Length: 320
Image (cartoon, rainbow, N blue to C red; front, side):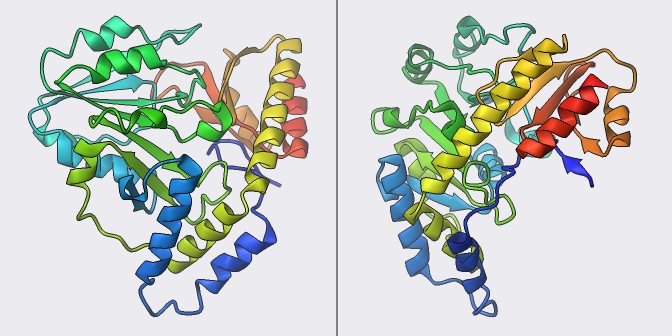
């Protein structure tokens, strides 16, 4: 049986009530979803994030929001991102930007040097940072750096907090204070809804005013499952703690095998191995992991945390 540890998905299914809610959304599949359910979902997300529902924009996946933000705000601006990351920034998307700057994270600590960003704020700039970073798992931002960025009149800052529930760190509390701050979130990861695709944006005033007229419809199964999950989110916190415990177990056992593995605040681990054809050898054992040689550096691999049995199979393969 194939074990998929390459996509950073949640290995646990959502509870039955959430899956039944998704099925309920199929009953009127010939109709567009009703706006009352969208407003209900936005209110529940507002309560979950302690923010006004007027600051929330919904989307079928946070990658679509990222694309729309770049299309809307990149004209006559520099764009700064981090490398490595998995942001989908195409050449077509960048046609209006002045230039793209990728700040490199360097092993072993993957520290983001503040001066590398602050130095670039002499001109209008859109900064896009995932925190924690995917694939390193490193926390890159602190409040001091964020406020230094946001106090510049030239800066727009977008933070991707896809793994917020795992890192337990957020900067959403700064949105009311700074109009040039926006935060991307998703219900794909901690809420186990990757197959339904539900992303959302928490927007400061500058971002919010530009997104007022964006499309409001989502598929009914996505809406109903999201609503039910937010009404009863206890499963999310329980599963997050299970995944964190498994992550730390896997990390410790890899250390004992003398495998270089890095601390992570996500639902995945970054490892380094110079074994020849390492990824292919895992495939031959029916285990899928993510090689980073194309996006970043050779010999680095990202391993998602799976079910306990899947993790044990991966560890046995590593030992062998």
